Amino acid sequence: MAMSRIVYVNGDYLPEEDATVSVFDRGFLMADGVYEVTSVLGGKLIDFDGHAKRLERSLSELEMESPLDRDALLAIHREMVRRNDITDGMIYLQITRGNPGDRDFAFPEPGSTAPTVVLFTQSKPGLAQSPQAQTGLKVISIDDLRWGRRDIKTVQLLYPSMGKMMAKKAGADDAWMVEESGLVTEGTSNNAYIVKGGRIVTRNLSNDILHGITRAAVLRFAREAQMEVEERAFTIDEAKAADEAFVTSASAFVMPVVSIDGTRLGDGKPGPVAARLREIYLDESLKTAI
Image 1: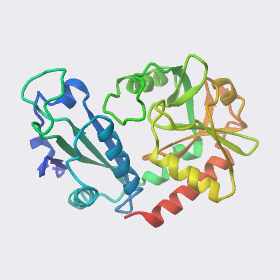
Image 2 (image 1 turned 60 degrees about the vertical axis):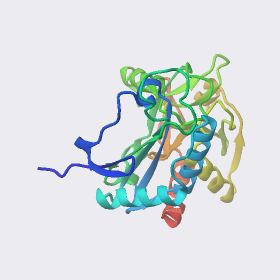
Image 3 (image 1 turned 45 degrees about the vertical axis):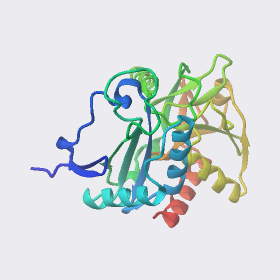
Image 4 (image 1 turned 120 degrees about the vertical axis):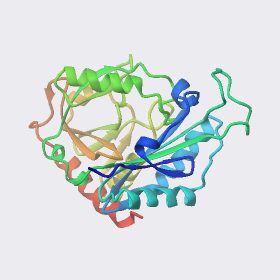
């Protein structure tokens, strides 16, 4: 029988079948919680500090106390990698406002309710060698119907899940969300980019999109490699006319996009800029992995 995963719940390391959270937990009842996903390559954590900093920001935006400092968080991540023998994969971390003992819209009094902290691992051997990087993704565009604070990484992921299902039904891999103005915000679980005439265009940071940790690193590496980067909103029509496109996320790294709403980009194969950025990102991130 396969050994069950070890999951972290509020200070305890437990077999996954013994890991439970209260039915009154506000994460379950209200989506009142935040999360981060950190990739593991070769047993090491990719971009851990970026994820730890963004977690702090998400918590403070929701007026939630941070139950763990960076070092405690790092120790738990490392212990999870060790106990589950993860070489390549992901660590999912979720912090909710906890269980106040009953259901109420109002937040519990500060200090009265301990936050709930959960971590689990997902083993993905060969995560960095994804075959999709060779073929590229097909995306469709959908209306962006989410709430206004996409910069807070909350567990409220219903619409992105619906977007993934819309893509699946359309025979595509993912969806890009578009505002009424025709401007693209981001993918369902990634930041979106187009390339035109060698210039990389991606939406500027605001409350409208998630401040991607992989996004920040990729743009930094692009600039260091003397590539031209423009941070501004682009339309879905502009995207369809682009030479190439790609997305970034903690688990997909840099992933090329080869068609948008059935319109083929370039020659319909992953483009050179996305391929180069993927290579640079993986090389540089492995150097600084901890």
